[in-house]
Image (cartoon, rainbow, N blue to C red; front, side, top):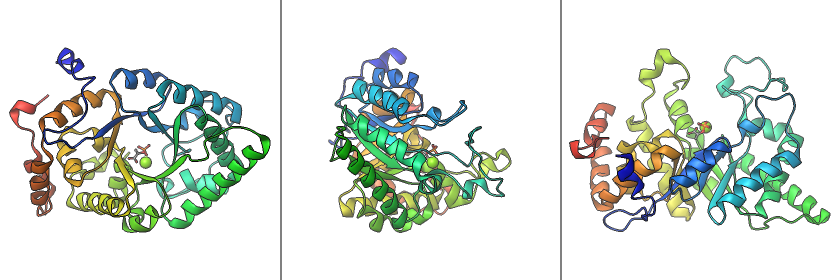
Length: 325
Ligand code: PEP
Ligand code: MG
């Protein structure tokens, strides 16, 4: 089977009826980059930068970050590299960084909220990303966005970093694209407004499911309630993609659902532009994509929208025996 999948590495990811889909990789370390490249990834749709900050005794300096971002950007060039800014807090803690004790850390001081508060920390990362943008096709992505104000505040700091670098004579890409993760219900509901502020969306289904269903994604006691194919999640996704399409904003998916074979007809029906997933999912997803038709996915999706339970949705999305892994 593995051998058979290798045969499709160089194939264009396109359905029977011509719908192309960018299949990209999520990486959270340098090691994973090679796996991504060996799977024929279109690029990196989510570079989780937390590893740079974890398992150490102090914040990574600008220079250290530039080196990492630049080496990834160069290896990928001209393929795109979406670097997500720091997403700590919640489940991810830093030893050297005093985070307050919180009753609800997942709803607390984390991700873009920390970055907009500790602006020195954020600007160090933004400067490093900008400097790497000179050496490849780099894009910036902000996590856990809940409002237009947050996007504007982050972009204002980005602008300040650009002004600094320009004054210092340090090269960077002036046209660097900026996107946000859509992973909070609030962001879904104002997706049309958020789209006015950015170049692209990436739907973070892991958090979007957690926050839509109010189910802690780490809590095993309620893991049966963590349901990607819940009718509400389907509607959240639909609202987001439709808003993006109306506004002409590139839209991808980078949560675990992007690599789920069962979910593929959903992305096809909505005409999602990009799926970013762990590298080992890319070839299986491509294999199924090559066999599907967007027209049929659309018909199936119309039926999914009438389902009032996740069991019905699962039943409709069940893989045919010939498609089982
Ligand atoms: C997500 O929330 O779907 C996501 C991709 O980000 P993370 O899993 O790092 O929170
Ligand atoms: Mg997330």
